[in-house]
Length: 431
Ligand SMILES: C[S@@+](CC[C@H](N)C(=O)[O-])C[C@H]1O[C@@H](n2cnc3c(N)ncnc32)[C@H](O)[C@@H]1O
Image (tube, rainbow, N blue to C red; front, side, top):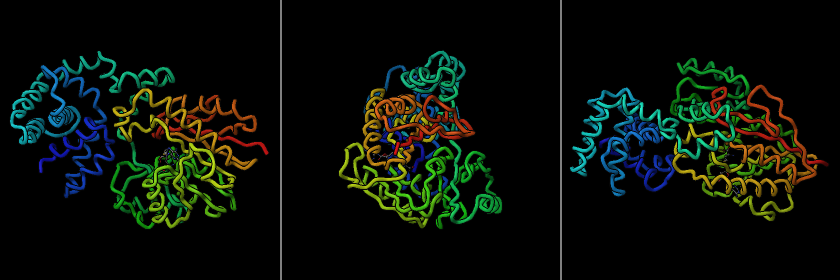
């Protein structure tokens, strides 16, 4: 099996069919039996998607005419070749010959791939200079994303764009019901796994290098979960008390559901709701591994009412569907798959879900609004509009060492303290 060829097939699903990289990998990787080979294919696919706009710009310069639509697999192979030559420690002759070998199903492409990759090696410097002079290639993001980030964060957008293109650290959440963080750090050290505590979040550990979860001590017994430190802050901020009823809205795959239950094991009850039945199953699976319990319900939270019956809650976490612009470093395909008009549609969906959630909050209760976005429309502007619509709502200021205090809520800019881009606002309902 030619690993470049496998990678090209996976990439073609993203580039041609608009499939997410996660879905394309879930489908393509199981065909590769060797663990190291799978890791190599995954690295190639993430690398090409992460650097797509710069690589595609160079490829455009190198090709005398664009490839036909039906040759998306050859385009993917060329991008793989360029990625290896530019970013990987693969010897250039091996990168070229192995990539050329992957064209065996389309013999005409052999000489083309060979010629383009060799031309790249000769002209790399000139191509880099051309890249630097083109906004989209230089920032390695589509222009519309550069523009929205620049509009929202004129002083920070370059930092955000840069952070989006870095491979993210792997962070763990220690299940404090099964032992403390210091003890788990000792266990990691004993296994030769280098890791650091994250100072702004008592449950969080950052690994120096990502590894497969099976290699983590007591993972299957639920000692730890994989979750970015920024996402872990939700449980602390929600601060649910013993006996309280909690609604976790937009809950799947359940990372924050579990964190809330670990943070407060004596809740009166927790209802985890998500519109996606399949993803909801992952909440159940995650809770099972961690030996935690919650009720799950598949329901569309943008539709008012009946799904919740007459229940009301003391605490609500609304982890709203969003652009994901704070987690581009984890899901680089967002740059390719997201469209400019998605943002207004997502904002409208968030507004509906937020207004419905508010009806389900007991007077005197607290709603924590969260997104993994850095866009003001989805965050502080969403909350400003909400407060203007609801006279019984006020904001609880979040005092913290992380992120920036905004006119409403608190924003973590992607890469800040090595965290994902995240937003939180805490809303109080008058009794
Ligand atoms: C940011 S993810 C949630 C992540 C989750 N809270 C966690 O920490 O693991 C957003 C979720 O919103 C769900 N969603 C989107 N539209 C929804 C709707 N109208 N009603 C309920 N859930 C929705 C998606 O299926 C997705 O699982």
